[in-house]
Image (cartoon, rainbow, N blue to C red; front, side):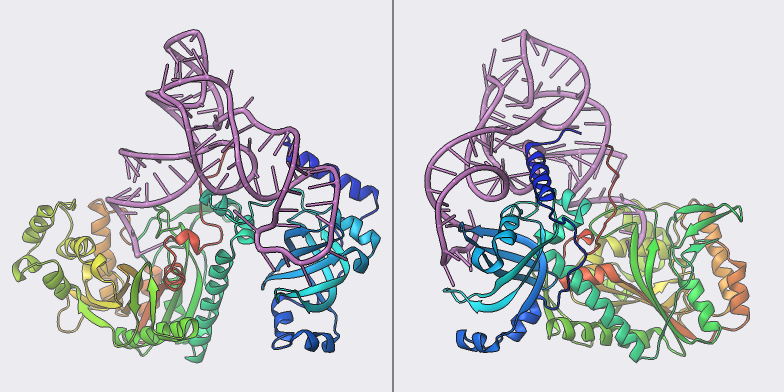
Length: 493
RNA sequence: GGGCCCUUAGCUCAGCAGGUAGAGCAACUGACUCUUAAUCAGUAGGUUGUCGGUUCGAUCCCGACAGGGCUCACCA
């Protein structure tokens, strides 16, 4: 590989440092402070107060800027909490350290120790009486005030993105906070966090194309899970009653600003609850998150105000199709008429699709994007809900809801089907759809029917797309902005 | 997978009816002990994504390929 001028010069300087006996990658420093702890310690203190404090602080981090004055220099040190200024001067750190300092570059990891003072302009600064190189950077950083904007480099070399774009770090800090809050909330409700297989002999619990892999010793094909659903329901059957799992699902499908092949989902199941209980729980959870993050139930997502104040709108699929898609009773209940309606709107619907599937296609095409404020869409057709309990008054629909916010599906929940005979019938219905050409239709799962035959308590379950939720709470337009290492094509060298 | 767009210095971007490229920051040399995009003087840095074609000549026009973005389809 051709070396450019910049790298050559850096390596030359590094050679000079080595010759001086400087350890380029030290391992013996203790850091007691952070940008945040120093600011805390100095809160409210003026120049005299700082002098009276008479305390040395230690700070380490990446040197992000150097403003050099010959015998002294201001540097910006960036650590996990932010940036802090230090003043490195020859007569304080000593001749030797200063010589080393002069050879360093923006991007190096350094250590300073010293007392605090305020500069003429009032900025809190560490007056270094000790300065050390901790780790030497060979490569230069991206430019200092435009930062790194090339999205491809940002995703492929996320470390550079995190170094140069403080907002990116804030997004991922918040992501972590959200997941912590969710765990707190679920734990408070007496749910048990569990882990179930990522590799499954059958990819069940959802409707999607799986990734396939192979176990050599057992000589068997395995699938990366598309959902943990069937395993979690085994745990409910086993008496754990309230369980949740926050983990990755894998779906072998397209990539977009709302889809990554591996994505994080929280699924939870609660025995002796119904989908209506879960609507209340979901409202409570989202409000808990918003209160803790924004201190408010209102916030902005992509220039639109979202208001989480409960109760949220609840509307059945049929009502929504009637009011938002302009369908009449006949079209809603007649397969041929529904097909005709879809065709008239320019939708490409397979002729073999049953009524329920056609209705959902129309719903996705005409209604979904209109659901900006939080909305529970309820009562999904039984054909598209192979694992949901039927509605008592109209058994062609199920006790199920999906939560829409900002025109996107965020959660999916239902009262679980626990009748093994009905479940077998549903799987058979799915097999028929598979034979009609729907390769994503659910497979027959005898094992799972066996579980239901043991008696699963009446239960409701829900899945919440964590990445999408994080997008909402961080005002991110693309799922890649909330996943540290989003999937990209591998680049040939 | 389809459509549209993008790829020029380490980074952020210019540019050219087709005549082998510029700026700022970063880098290098020098000056400077209160700067905040420090300042001042100077220097250097490029196989213009890759491969072909057209042409006397291609960074520019055409084609293929690679990667990326948006979007449609599939889906959460």
